[in-house]
Length: 264
Image 1 (spheres, helix red, strand yellow):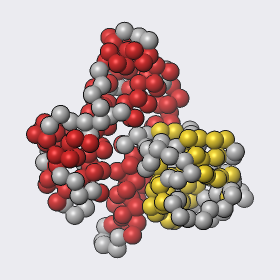
Image 2: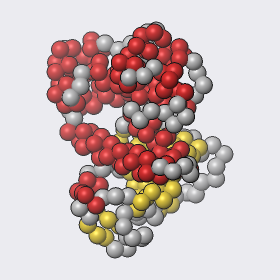
Image 3: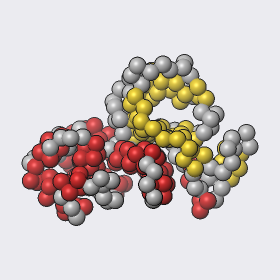
């Protein structure tokens, strides 16, 4: 297999396959070697993934980024959105500054799940413009993999602890005092370091997590607006609807009624 270098402006992937996969009842080989680049976005907090024999416990919102030749196996039950893609010629491995910074395994939380779901849906669509929109969505997903990988490498242990807790418990009521107890810092210091390293306050980060999860539920479930609000940690349906419209410019109901959703 040849290895070539590509500049950032030519880092355009060819998406060869995308699908939703559920391991329940599926026959799985003991291990395999990846033939192409792969991204998988996990939807459940269960199962264990092995990348080159290194174990990773799976949680909802985790992402694996695989290069050709990587050894893979998994145990337990899980579900995920998966994408196979390449750069340039088939069976050639390409290297780029952006791609090289993406970690093999990291967590994006709810933010990346909606993008993955939309990309899978567009892959199977045959309407004019669907493939162009799919490529746009996949490029955005690829950039998020880069962005989250870089952030995870520069964040302090305290901020990583806060982020992991917020992603795991976003539907609960969380205070700065609670985050302070988790990290051993006073609440004001937690606020300062979190804002300095992420560009957001813990409250803003939590709200964005909830909104991202809410969008996913609105598009992929039949739950009522009140049920969606409750599952996402909002104190009331009216409060959720007000915040949703402030952030996206439309109500949750109108967002759901759109066949393809709004490009928010």
